[in-house]
Length: 189
Image (cartoon, rainbow, N blue to C red):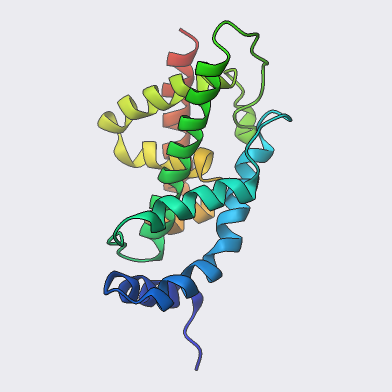
């Protein structure tokens, strides 16, 4: 009987942690389409002239995840949570670089997220502000901050976030509303 993909991912993560490069390669062959889909969902919401494409974002993610010693991933959920956080870091680094290149330039208004009509900010400086606020919010409500990170930066839907965090979709909806209200309130200041 075949091992279900989520269990197989956990097995390959454990094997990779023990130094099995073949398990690492099999893992990334299996999850690459999911990671690309996450990247595409996020980048689809960005400005049309965004210089990162989904494959480039996933490639950078893979370089960061594979670049050093194996990360101690606990399971599939933990892997995708780390992947979403790493994508967030890549996108923040990219925004910082663009801001540094275009100091004083005209910024276009773009939607950071069309989820539930959330459209409070412009791209480069404001994505950095969003990251700063999200970092502050993590101290007050770590799980709700993780919901924002997985939905916004990871591109996951409510059911996928619930699976990754091991909570119900209703809890994700509640956390999303709380986090969104907190973040939007601070972004409007």
